[in-house]
Image (tube, protein in one colour):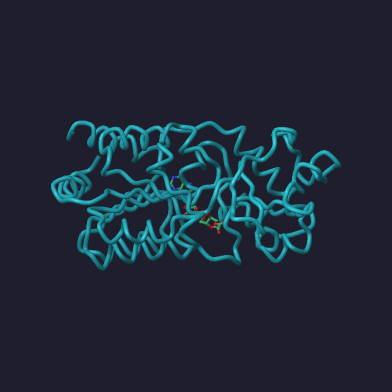
Length: 275
Ligand code: OAD
């Protein structure tokens, strides 16, 4: 790990407040899950009939729930077949070192941070989790997608009677929906920890951003708060992004160009050594 990262993390350790790690699809890329905006990304590929931007919306779900569900079931299978990688494991190690000062805010719906061993209490899944569904018309009760639905869902495979019955489990036979934040929806506290994330950023001692292109609003607020509060801001990414630019502008900012799997393990050993 370079001297500047050590200096910034060292100063965060001697301050108070949470050290927040914000992750995006780049963290799971090394597990084989396509990112959203990369060449093979989900936003580019979509389903057979629709582009992803058209599918990942509440508007599409209310008009064609079966098409949207088939796409999510396919993506859920891709996530389930993937295994946590060195970056996920490093974050588990970092949580062990930082304990109550650790907070993980993830945009990833693949559940890999939790499967790697990050604690549910300190992992905010701000875009939901693809293994779960919920009913709209009830007090939102998040529950696992029923076991009758297989994980190895082929691409563009239509729902059958079994799936229809399992997914229409809401009051009066209404469709359950994937427990994800659709593109045309807003963050909230109860489901997506919106206020908790902002509160943590107002108290944070540092923010480490990993593998995200900076295209969504809550992460953009978090980075903005880090810059305005002049707390250490370390951005790990393969490519330039609005967040690497923000780190470049911030007096306490630093960019580590490269992969999550390359840069997070050395940070984990540094924090373990500093305990
Ligand atoms: P993107 O696909 O937009 O960005 C992934 C970022 O990770 C890019 O900047 C890549 O350069 C970088 N990257 C790729 N592989 C990497 C690696 N191995 N190590 C480090 N960086 C790597 O994905 P997100 O930023 O996560 O939201 O997308 C954010 C949100 O956009 C998603 O959660 C989704 C979408 O709208 C919702 O569905 C609500």
